[in-house]
Length: 360
Image (cartoon, rainbow, N blue to C red; front, side, top):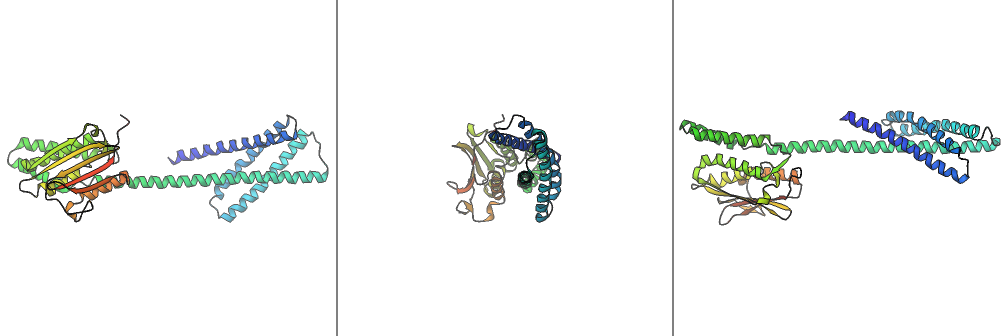
């Protein structure tokens, strides 16, 4: 990557260097037309430009080293080199103009000195301008490179955070599931145990192999939720009742992977497991304008709320995890609100932008 970046900057230098001197030649020649010079002067301009193009190439390699020097030392070096190159360039330009274009004609001595000094001054400012442009462009490239490094580092940290949040599977779920499978094996309910192992395998494969950075269609999330709930249904049997209500246009909407799982897990933990008769979980999704609305509701005992947030830690880490993932993915363009369910229970509402996979 760094090699490609160096090649790109190298190509940019030669392109800008050449275009800059072409621009100088055009301006110089158009300015000479005011003096009504002969057409042959065009070749003088081209020759002077080519020599200027050649003389400034070594400056690039000197300035690359001077870039890391003390600012005062760097400025003095630039002024010295601009003077030196300007003098050499002026000598060449005077030679091509008086000896070639004017066929050896020279003005009086005093006029010659004045013309030479004026030409040297112009050459100095041209080389100084070239130097200023070089350092200006190099500073801009360095600034952009540092921004790119910062952006890359931020993205890497962002991805690491999302992966960490996504992979926080509840160990109690695995423990309870494996314990239930063990019980089924001891009671010789091998068919049920085999189905439970298969469902657990499918759920873990989905949860571990889905990229947490990429979003998936809601339909896949619903399938994963069904797998999870089928596993839990073996534990709770008839005590766990589930209903799904997902609109057709919401099925293909993109959502963060496993965004529903911690909410369903909380509902089972606090609304189903704590009640003798079990509980009911309702999962719904629909499109509303430019947003997708997701809802997980239960008929459990509920929790005390304060402005849409639980007053205690009774809701577990699932909501905190979900809120942090949504913030990392959508910045401020989302909402996660808790409300009381009627006649009892808790309702978790999520609003995120309605997005579709345009690559399909």
